[in-house]
Image 1 (spheres, rainbow, N blue to C red):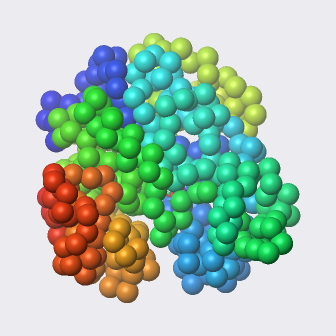
Image 2 (image 1 turned 45 degrees about the horizontal axis):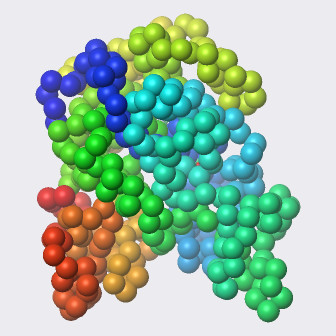
Image 3 (image 1 turned 90 degrees about the vertical axis):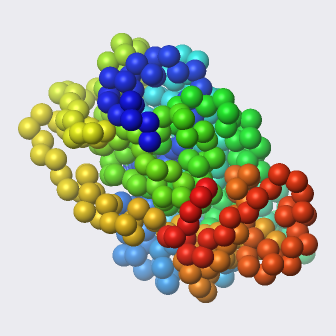
Length: 392
Ligand code: CNA
């Protein structure tokens, strides 16, 4: 942690001089656009739990094996909640655009699949979990565009491969649990890791690997700032904590930041569904300081709600070492950590400390034949239980 960084004034000053901010974005950025996140009350997992979709667990919605078995629940919820082209960017998205416009943004690494960063005009975006703009037949790997499957999705039907000899299920090219993130994530991070001068984490619970690992991949000397409704404590092996926590709705917080820096707020007056949310909030939220390094953004007279601070749940050691969802062995492709692995969080995982996303199971590592182990400059760390992981 950077002791000297923990106040709002220092953050605002740093942002003025920053030139290479990396943002890790998550579903919270799009909640005000009308797209629920995964884990908040009323989020997609809650909706999946209470809908009659025949799922064993809500996570199965986005798990590759479950999708292969039965893709209907995914398309049913997808067509309701995430249907492309029906949402407008939030003030949070426009803030990213403003950072880029002011030549302060190095990259947005987004876990979102709604495409709203690009829709807001942000160019430097890496879609860590892919995009719905293209799709692939799971059987013959034939590629399709969104327009090819849109009609089926709108009718809540499962799109099937058009090759008569195939008939496989077509899956949008978004990354499911059990799939590797696109190579572009690791490739871009290698270029970005030493350039970054600040990290802002926005609207994410950081529960999904490998995106959460970006924290440990960047230099510990750059400030790490959280903008989120709830406190998020990154797993201890990824970060020793945020230098500054700005808690509240990200739209309100970025509006405060822009006003404080006297940045142009013209983007706040758009129309459409996001535009409605983008109208300035009056009265504007004010930051209430909770020393040493936390600010709650509250409307006048608003009480600090436990749900907002999330302190009770979040501060427990178990939460601090939050269980990650899925880790796959890069040797044999088996799931070795997370919701589906037989051993769950008790799996033994060997992770390459030099690479953003390279893991091996006990057997593949023990065989020692893997090219990655043999090549120079790669070092592995062993994790017996994810919540006891050290050293990355
Ligand atoms: P998550 O685990 O549901 O966490 C969301 C976080 O955002 C939580 O910590 C919330 O407290 C916080 N949050 C919610 N609303 C706001 C708000 N208005 N202002 C500030 N913070 C808020 O979701 P993650 O993004 O961490 O998980 C990654 C998954 C979610 C990725 O694989 C995504 O593809 C997936 N997802 C994407 C979308 C989308 O594209 N819009 C929607 C739902 C899920």
